[in-house]
Length: 172
Image (cartoon, rainbow, N blue to C red; front, side, top):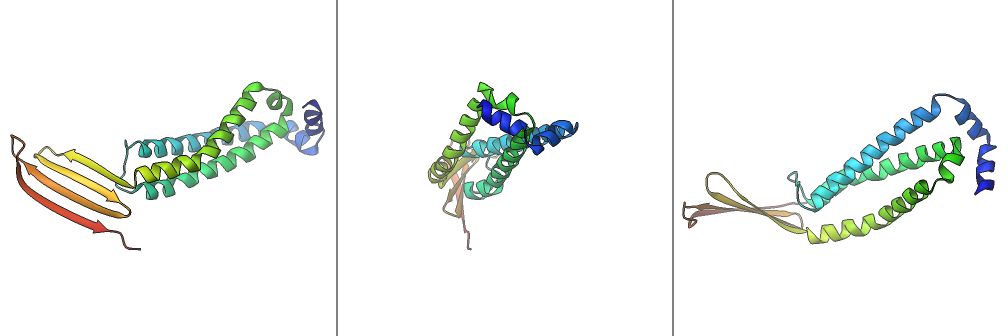
C-alpha cells in the first residue's frame, strides 16, 4: 500500500490538487451533496417499498423516478472520491474506516438490484385500504398497471349501506 501511496503522491494530479487551496474543500462539498442525494433517494425508495409513502403511483414508476438519482449520485461520489484520494492518498488509503466504508458500498450496490426486484414482485399486487370520515371504506388495488377502487358506505354499526366500484387500466 505504501508503494501505491508514494506513486500517487508523485503524480502531477496530486501536486495540482494538493497545491490549489480551493480544490479539496470544493470537492468535499460536492462529495457531501452527492451523499445527500443518494441517501435521500434511497430513503424515499425504502419508504415506498415498506408502504409508508405511495404518492399515487406504482412502485415501478416511483423506482424509475428515484433510482437514477441514486446511480447518478454514486457516479459523482466515485469521481469526487477519486479526486480526494489523489489529493490526499495517505489519509484515505491507510484508514481502516475508509476500507470498511468501501466494502459496505460495494455490498449495497451489489444487493440493490435483487432487493428492488423482490420488492417489485411483492408489491406488484398491492391493496391500500382507508376508512374515510364519512364512513366510506375505500380499497385500492394496484396490479400490473391497472387500478381498481372499491368504495363501500358503512352504517354506524358497520353494515354495508351502498357499494361502488371503479376500474382503470393503463394502456401503453
